[in-house]
Length: 380
Ligand SMILES: Cc1cc2nc3c(=O)[nH]c(=O)nc-3n(C[C@H](O)[C@H](O)[C@H](O)COP(=O)(O)O)c2cc1C
Image (tube, protein in one colour):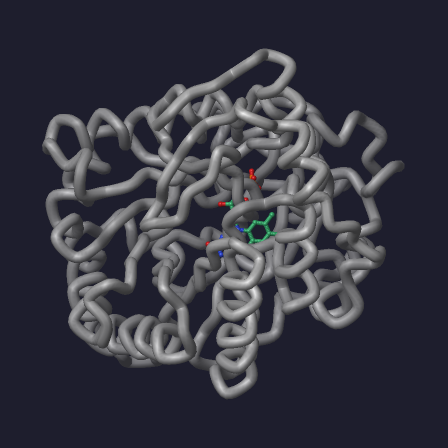
């Protein structure tokens, strides 16, 4: 089972992996990748950052400075911190068949919108090719308090400058008991400002984690609440050059249009999509992972849905003539080079992966080889 346990041991908790992983010495592949790609590649510029290999890591797979630097060494050009909160939060704890797991594997099958009510039986073992890997995870967005993570954010910004990488800092507000949308927006705004004060130049507001029981998981579905949050966060930023992104889940064009209409004035880009919530069970039919009734599915299984979402977003942006204002970062199901190309063809300006960053970290190298072999030379 090549690569499977090297970055993340699925039989252990999130906290164990965060503390001890990644479980291998990571070789710096950047020079090798540059040589392979040569003059081929997809020339892109995102917020002043230029590359001809627009592949990055989305929020969720990189838990510490060690993980972040490891992904940069793998050749990922943009690296995103796992989402931070303003409060301390431990990961969900699983019982039963998947004791201590926060991640389990899924069968090799594509998921469509029509499947979302169906149950899928999870697996502890993975024997297929890592290029087809799919998983489900339920962490619940665990976090340290800002006094612990802000120094790491500052360190990573320096590391990224020295190594020609771009860092995105992802944050999420935490609803207070009895609190309202303004309280939640203030928490998001505080986090955006705190990240910026530590040196972050791109801040991502996560409006879409399906693995939390609170309201922060589905905000992007409520266009007015989304507007309140992004407006407040933008107002609180000190530097007008700091870029603000939102992370959203799967949706249709009409909803993305409404979301863009209400938020585009305050943001610079959208990352789509987050994991797809599904009912994942053990062999006895019991809910596999803790948290809400569903857990987020990701990896190859959601490629079709993710590409469809990027296309919906692209068309929504076009109909609103916002091409010059809003960047689309495609994410979901990219575990091999063909998936990367499909996101770009659907209209993404940059592509990210989360599952592959843990289970197939040779992805940037493989994309470079693919672009060279197919002699692909394009500009976005
Ligand atoms: C282990 C894991 C943890 C994740 N945690 C977060 C998170 O904290 N914040 C977030 O916005 N998305 C999170 N995600 C979602 C990913 O950023 C991404 O949107 C989703 O997994 C689809 O990409 P993939 O198919 O390449 O995994 C997580 C994904 C994985 C695999």
